[in-house]
Length: 178
Image (tube, rainbow, N blue to C red; front, side):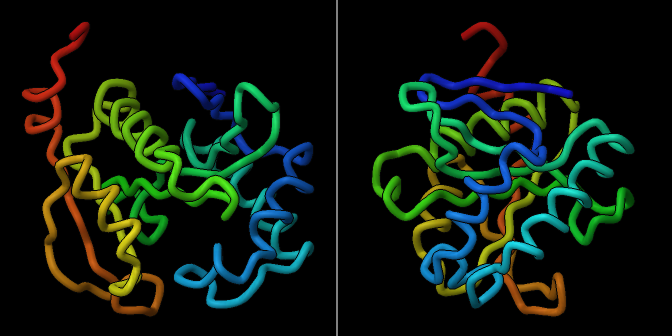
């Protein structure tokens, strides 16, 4: 399984050792405001770890726990997966952070690494990110990545704002080794 790193983060594929850290983040109603709409139960977090481990085994990518390199604490999570969990659909990137790490640039740092890995590691031709239409923080991260707003679509039974970035656009701005 692929471990990724940035200046401040280490990305570890979800595993049972991440349960407490994930549950600390996922039970925060503000973290879940635009995702689940309510805190996640410990049972839901444990079940999601199981689903993610199965996706890692089947695809070789899925969700990572973001471990802060200085503290060793789990401070967030992010993914590369397929929209609607269907490999016929484009790849999607996503992220979330513990509330005490908001406003520190970690979401942008993590999202850049997810994009880099999606295009350079997985050779994805297109990456999408979806957000609740009211989630201005995620919209700012998507803008910083150079993603283009593609409109509202229904995913996961909800209407969400979809943003897209093509591999050629990313590689043109971030040539290998630059």
